[in-house]
Length: 256
Ligand SMILES: NC(=O)c1ccc[n+]([C@@H]2O[C@H](COP(=O)([O-])OP(=O)(O)OC[C@H]3O[C@@H](n4cnc5c(N)ncnc54)[C@H](O)[C@@H]3O)[C@@H](O)[C@H]2O)c1
Image (cartoon, rainbow, N blue to C red; front, side, top):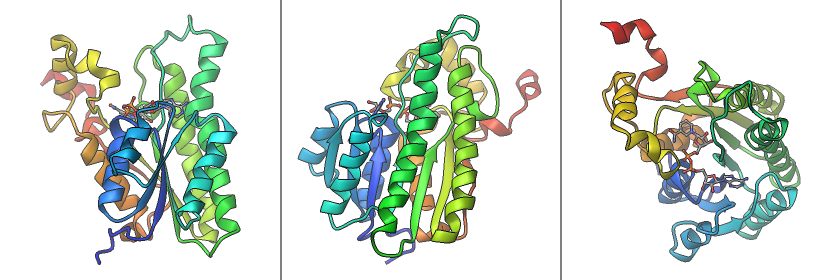
């Protein structure tokens, strides 16, 4: 057994039907965890039916009933869950001066407030079970560090998610719960197909990547697995960029 082995761990992964969340669910399963996949999209059920995860909950993570169902599914697998990965996201860019209150609130609710509620319920479920050595991993974004027009709500919510990561690390660390984040660079998924299939946009994104390529969901998933595993047992409150160096680059570098 290696220290990134997750045998017998029970993990809840949100946003697990597609993209990065699905890759995380597959990676944790491959390392021996029993994974409860949670997603709004009914496609999440296929992951269960095809044996890629141990249980599937189809629901909206902003609904407390979904959170309860996911944690109950973890209990049914022999829980409580000791790993929680939060990757759920949906939204469209909107200019700061044109965005409705409702749209702003929807993004902040999904990315930040619902994540806080899920974290809290996860920790409360641990308290009623065996003493935990538990790990939470939030999927953050480079938008937490720098601005792109149209992404104000997303950026504010992801920056808030990093603040939540640190707060949770400090408040729950004494109880054996570590909380960290990963900030993926550009990862081609179905949701952002319009970017990577657009020659001009895709080329511009590649120029901003020191490695000269996009990342893959599997590369992000391996970083998440590290933060979920005992391999990272003294890492708490950190944000690990998995971006090929994109956030290390100053715009000046693009002129040379
Ligand atoms: N792809 C990238 O380039 C990139 C870069 C940085 C950060 N991220 C972050 O990675 C995470 C995963 O995004 P992705 O790019 O894989 O997108 P994705 O669309 O492939 O996956 C997001 C998943 O979340 C689910 N979802 C949306 N709203 C939900 C809700 N209310 N309740 C439950 N599930 C819901 C969707 O159905 C989908 O399966 C997000 O947090 C995103 O902000 C992605």
